[in-house]
Image 1 (tube, rainbow, N blue to C red):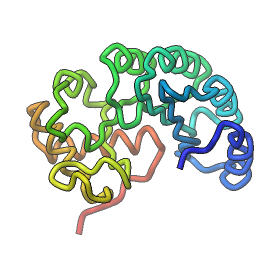
Image 2 (image 1 turned 45 degrees about the horizontal axis):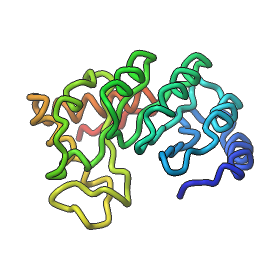
Image 3 (image 1 turned 180 degrees about the horizontal axis):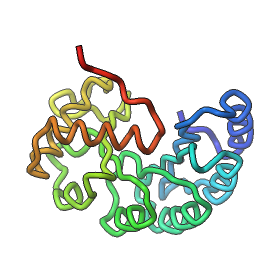
Image 4 (image 1 turned 180 degrees about the vertical axis):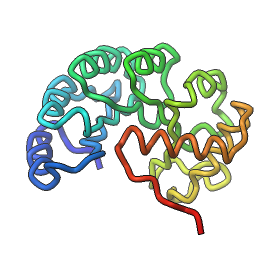
Amino acid sequence: MPIPPDDLETLCEEAARHWPKHDGLCVRDVRIHQALVLDHERSLRLETQFDPTTHRVQLHSRDADADIGPLISSAASAGVRGVLHCFTGTHALAELALSVGWYVSFSGIVTFRKWDDLALLRLVPEDRLLVESDAPYLAPVPFRGKRNEPSFVPRTVERLAVVREVATDVLAARTAENAVRLFGLAMPDVRS
């Protein structure tokens, strides 16, 4: 649930108090919509209360690419790393984020019949590509309209693999490695 800008300070204080040394903590999902442009500069100033080497920012842009570009540049110059979450924006915004070391993540939206920007799915280098559920929203086809869950992510990976002409298992492994690297997670041992 998005947190109103007035509550950001409290959120950041609570997160710092509860997880002061937690590696891989994604401080918050900053959702910026053209109709409701949040006080995003204030939001990212609060991000600097955290260690930028271990804490990440997720930015979700919906028709607000002009507002997001300067935000990404400013955050990156302060050492903040992040990901364009649930990305459906322009090639220019993706290229800007990638140029400053950020990642780009795609959700089930890329499986929808109306999704036609296949070039965007190929634009993101394999080492900066992430996939996500964005649960409980945006379930991929054939689950569209249902409550989304992480077990549906393979459908998004399959779509990306087909468009990028790579084996699904290879792309799944690579995106998992990228998440581990970006968020400082421990890679689970899935061998029997």
